[in-house]
Image (cartoon, rainbow, N blue to C red; front, top):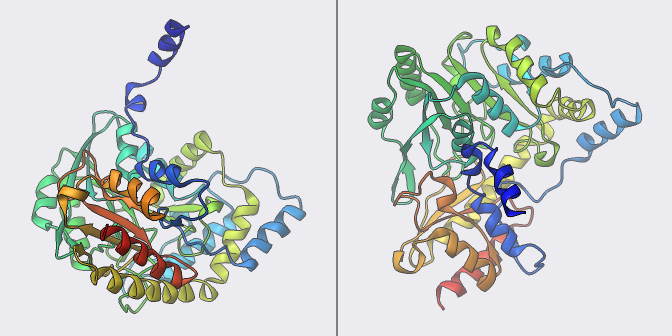
Amino acid sequence: MSLVSTSKKAHMRQTVLNLEESMIRQVANAGMGRSDVLKFWFGESDEATPAFIRDAAIASLQLGETFYAHNLGLPELRDAIAAYSTGLRCAGAAAIGADRIAVTSGGVNALMLAVQALVDAGDEVVAVTPVWPNLTAQPLIMGARLRCVSLKPVAGEWQLDMAELLAAITPATKLLIVNAPNNPTGWTLSRAEQEAILAHCRQTGTWILADEVYERLYFDPTPNGCAPSFLDVAGPEDRLVVAHSFSKSFLMTGWRLGWLVMPASMTPHMGKLVEFNTSCAPVFIQRAGLVALQGTNNVTPQLVAHLKICRDTLVPLLQALPGVEVASAKGGMYAFFRLSDQDRFGDSLETAKRLVVEAGLGLAPGNAFMVNPTPEAQGWLRWCFASRDVARLEQGVERLQRWLAL
């Protein structure tokens, strides 16, 4: 029996066998079924999708819209996404047409499709870390050679060494992956940095995959109410693919609906990849997405305002704790903080598991966001502050404070 099992296992690709289990899931599994745990480990709000969006899906189902759609998405949804994205752009940016849009089954699917489209086995891929682990796993699944350029923490705030990043991107680099606003750090690229990266990648012939799903969850005032985007500075046929999702800005994490913006010449081929992955996003979910875009002014601004209250409640409380280092994030929904006593808290995964069991507090370990965790990741924890009840954040800090005092 063991010989059969071994034989079957051997037929799987070694790259897949080598994939690590999500450290965040490991922590969550330690707390599943425990009602006394305050859960801040996953990157989602605890607030349900607004009723008018849910009603749109229900209405679609009642109409019997349970059949296949176009691989690239409903034409009316692609038109709406193009108009929505164009409306967020800064003055002078290129308009975005529906011919540059592909609707996907979530942001994860959007990112994986982009990597499948661009990366061959053996290609070099550069990624900016710390970052959500899916972004570094996806090129590895495709057999790429991954190089990481780490942000550096300065007084709790993570910063990019632009010279180091540009030196890492050479003509041998097929793809640069960058997530800004960043999960987990909240770090955000400036427009000047985006222009410098784009100019350099034009010279090296490198594609850019920009994960901008937190674009609207941005707390600094801007004319268009969102973070700087590569779409503000790039031309329509630049080697740029931007991934987006309905999950964060519309409270739709479980719906699995996202989109890609790409050069128009690439879109028909992306439709073929969608066919071979998922065929299409479900029609009734696309109907919900269309209504969400139409009602964005009734959802996203209020969400961002509430998240800012959550951030400005949690971060000062953490800063007041001895041995805790943290800065306010410019974007996203996370406080990424460091416990300075490395002798006690050097292994973030073990610390996060202990917090679940000993303090009833569920956080994500910092080393989940690094490839071959570097010293920069050790001792860090991610706290998702997207809480409908701000008092839960205060209760969580009280639990952390008591635990640190043990």
